[in-house]
Length: 313
Image (cartoon, rainbow, N blue to C red; front, side, top):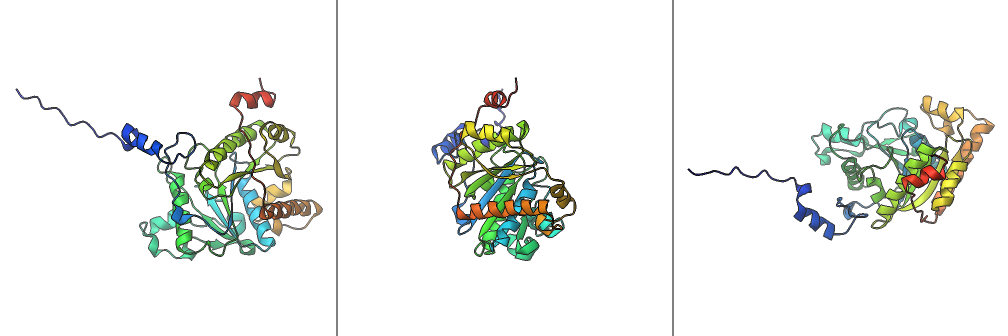
C-alpha cells in the first residue's frame, strides 16, 4: 500500500529562520529588531519634526495642539498629525473630529491617486494644518502602516514643502514598533509626563524606544514636558538619574481642563493672568524648540531601579 504524506503546511514568513536571519543581517533597527525601515523616498525634509509621546491620558493632545498654536504665533507654518484611532488630537484646533487618512483611503478603495488634499487636511486655528492618521480596526493591522501612508500622502501632494514644523501626537506608551513609527521621521522625541510613578514609568520606556531608534535614524531625545503637576520633584529625581531634562512645566490648572471641554485652544480662552502665564510658557517652549535643542543622551533605568528611585518597595 502506498502511503501518501500530506503536504506540510507553509510556515508563516515571520517564523521561518532563513528569512529571520536574512533580515537580521541587514541594517538593524535597534537591538535585534527585524522591523521594516522607513522608505527614504518619503523622508520629511525641510521642516523641524517633533514626535510627542507619553502615558495615555496625560495630556499629549492638549500639549501638542497648544504647542502647534504657539509655533504658529511665532510665524511658523505648522502641520499637526494625530496618530491615534480616537482621532481627537486636533479637535480643539478644528472644533470637530475630522476624517482620518484611513477613512478617506477606504472611501476610495485605497486608490490614493483619487484623493485631494482637502479630503484629509483641515486648516485649524491660526492656520495650523491638521491631519488625523487614524488607525486600523481593533485587533488588526499596525499603526506603523497608517503613519507611513499618511506621510506618503502628504509627500505626494507636496504638502510638506511649505511646512516649517511637523508635530506627531502619538498614542500612549510605546509597546511595539508600530507606535514608534513617527520616530523614524522625527528630529526630536518629546515626552509629556506628570509628577507621578505611572507617568515616569511610561516615560522610561519611551526614553528606551528613542534610544533604540537613534541608532539608525536621525531622531534624538529632546526632553520632558511636565504636565498636570503642581511640582516636578519626582521628574527631576528621574532626570538626575538618567540624564533627561525638563523643557517646560504646565501645572494642573482648571482652565486647561476647561479649554478641552470647550473644544478650544488655550490661546482662544478668555484672558486672565493665570492663562497668560500658561500661554507664555508655550510660546517660550516653541521658541526654544525652534532655536534648536541639544540632543540628550539619557539612559533608561531598569524597572526595579525606578521602583527603588521613587520610593516603592
